[in-house]
Image: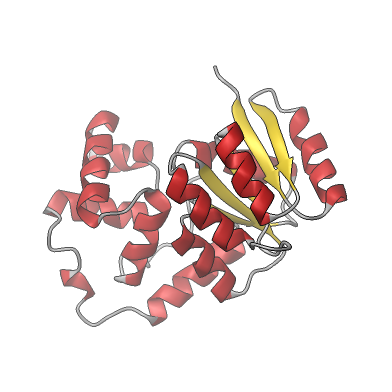
Length: 222
């Protein structure tokens, strides 16, 4: 099994050192490099092509949101996981719109960070529980009257799968719920992303929840 190559982007050297020490003992993870600001994160991402970037939001020069957007424009296969102290709604949604696949607060433990890195590397979306709860409340408040008619380009089965994606379920769980093969679900998910013109699961979740889908559950598969 290939190791997940991680780039740590944070302007606090002691925090970077702590994250490096925390992850260096995980057999599945390899530290590809570090960056102390957004500009360096962009350069390092281009040079190192990591699988996952742990991205702080508030850094000198280009901030984490802008860095995320630029990195993903050049290398859309990289998974960006926001790891920050900031939990304001505008920070969360700016990061998700930039293409980040996950958002964790810095008070989470090693197990949560490792689990999030693995999930993001698989293309899944993951959020701290408090962030996930606030996302649900935020999108519920925006729920349009005609949300049942959102995404008319999707088939009934695709809408059913999108609803489960928006609730945070992974492909295996969706396959179990709908009594489908995992490969069949993967094919449906690819078609959904293509029709919605989104790059990954995180962007699909944001668009689906903005349309009112997936708001009746407040937990993600772990």
